[in-house]
Image (cartoon, rainbow, N blue to C red):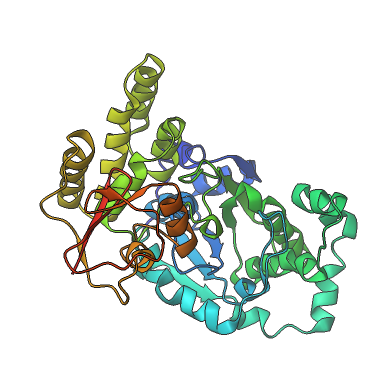
Length: 393
């Protein structure tokens, strides 16, 4: 595939969903020259699902792919075990090899919802990181000082609070940096929370006599509760969630997230998004634009037909306050209310299900319940909030 050097497309590539570019001048020159670039993104399988927060860098990879560049996707099966605390206020525990293997089982398939996987180069970083010994690691560590690491905001905050910071955490940036050497990356994509780790890649490439990669950081988007979208907080909209659930979860987002989601989590026309912003600023009803956003996301990850069905379902259950005729059904592994809520994906975790019950947010056959050990029977209709229904069979 020939490299597309269209100036307008390059300009959009370098601005949409971009927080910062390091090495911008060199990157722009390479893009305009028609040189094929190796564009890297690493994802640690710390949970089984990719979510819309992860879609922001994946969409940027898609932008590069559509211009003809080589996408290099790294599944961090080694770094996933070690654990990155870049975005954490406490030490991330190490995961077992078995847990990481289970988590990453469908990662490539999930990434394929956004990328043309057949044209991607897929790597697992255990291939090279698992072979490194103390001599090589010491050489890499010599390129950085302890003060470089402890100056990071979240690490400094933890140290000031007297919290433990393990030596293992100091090694993580070296591993991510070595990934760039192993795949000879020209560009690395990552969230703003990954800035230090990606910069480490530039330093490491110099150490190994490679040209330092350019860096594109993307904004982080908030989840369902207004905090950064994170699997560990259970506030995610997963790429694999069914159409009805995805639509409903988008509708539950805070109003101020409508425009950022349109800009960063979709490739909806930017001029149209600016029109939406003006209308919202002028007092238009946010619900109308949230419905457009929900439709767009469901259409992208499922189909236009699924998006229309989800919208009709939402209008019937939320706007008209009816119980839908075509309820989703579940035959659970156990008939307690918590199991039904989790296995139907109405609640992401058992703890969240119990919390919803305690807060009077769950009904059975139209009656609010407050017993998290309640046993259900076939035919019972479970409702959470105003939008989520399931019939037990």
